[in-house]
Structures are given as C-alpha cells and as structure tokens.
Length: 106
Image 1 (cartoon, helix red, strand yellow):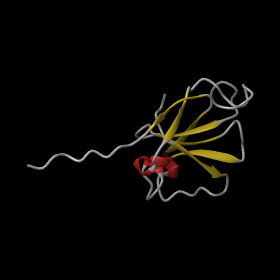
Image 2 (cartoon, rainbow, N blue to C red; image 1 turned 180 degrees about the vertical axis):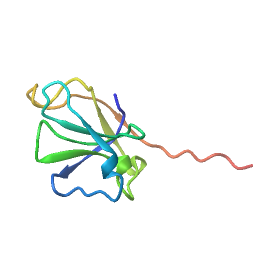
Image 3 (cartoon, rainbow, N blue to C red; image 1 turned 90 degrees about the horizontal axis):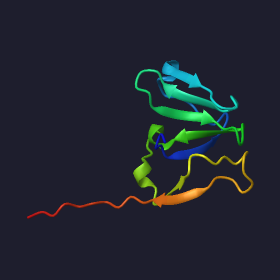
C-alpha cells in the first residue's frame, strides 16, 4: 500500500549520499524483513528482503538519477502474497504505465 516502485540491489551494493543517520527501522509480521523509513518525512527508502536476505528492495524514487517515470511498465503486486508463503512467488494484479501528457499549445 505504500505505492513505491521497488528495484533490487545486492546487500553491500547500496550506499548513501546523505540522510542515513535519519533512517529508522521497522519490522513486522515474522520480524525477518528490515524496513527502513526516513524519521523526518516518513518515506520508505528500502528494506532487506525476507524472500532473499542478500538483497534490498529499494524505492526507485530515492535513487540519484532515477525516476519511476523512466520505467515503461511496473508490475503491481497484490500486497498480500509473499514468495515465502506461496509457491510461484508474488501475485501480479496489474501493471502501471506512465504516459507523458503534453498539453495543447494554442
């Protein structure tokens, strides 16, 4: 439900330009995944995955030089199903596509 576009990074491949001291961690359900949020603005920056603890899932909007709008298509998962809980992995329920709107100039 947080609505972030997530991309993958191997643990050790993620570095911070600034703000790392403002991050706070939250764990829920099984307590395995480590979710990180900015303690000042509340944005979800990344989390260490329960499905693969050697990877981070990173909010693409938090990456320098990356915009979620650069991605042609983004799968949307149901937010309930987890690969560790269901054979076959996540359940895709749709796709988001960014279409640039150009206002008419008169």
